Image 1 (cartoon, rainbow, N blue to C red):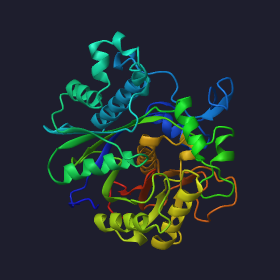
Image 2: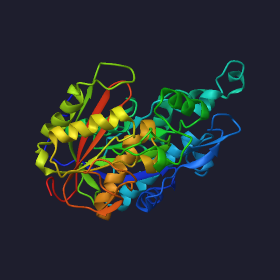
Image 3: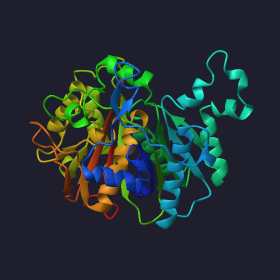
Length: 394
């Protein structure tokens, strides 16, 4: 699926983030720039409840007025962080501000209250909070926004799908502005152990020892959590970046495996470039999905080799932030946004022999376009074309 691009720039003009590095976008950038993973040894994530394992969970914090669960507090913090940032950069909300919220498993903490024999004690407010539409609806009410409000879910590509959905709304004049949110606080022992049993998640080693995207001896990813917010608009503001275009597709092949032909992965790259009216030789960086698993890393490396310049810089921040599932792509787009303003690429330090195109640690940025690719479990593919706000091709 291509995105119907119009030539008026679509900007990301506000960024908000809650990650394992802390509450706020500044904490995210400081953590990425340090090159040190956010994951910590945490009780309950080892082979037994008594043992600890490596996981990048959001630290305690937030505002209790935002909700009774970590999910609610993180989502609202990220939204407020992005909106206040956009205000400071010159944004004025239009009459039709929409909301797109990307999530997969939703508020697991609240969901536990609905186990058999427990739900009768819940208040009506708590019951209504279980509906996926309620968090979006209450945010719209709080800010007086009146555009469409929806949830999207496409596994690990959910954050990118939310961005591209918002762009379609803006391109087609359905809205004036869009608040995009992506929330995933699913790093519970039950969920993480399932991904460990699938053979893709690691809890028994430090992140850089286990998760080495596009390098030798990578065993998979360390689980992470995040809530990320963006304000997207056509207004001329002091914006972070322009979203030039993108594409989405589906392998239609297997519930966990990438189609080895890579037909739809590669077409997603070419369709995204065509949609953005950008040639491959304008691309300077690939911010990859890069989870450190063999099949995903191999698929992205092959697509880059076939379709992008030989000197394109490739990097993944998953060893630093953890794999934040539904919020993974949003965390990585936030990293790109701040890389443009900071004029530095927050790449993970390389620790082993690997792809010669890898960017090694925090590196001064070369002007140019960044492609953001995401591969979601089940065959979801998405690619977004991102550029510095001053020019679509600088």
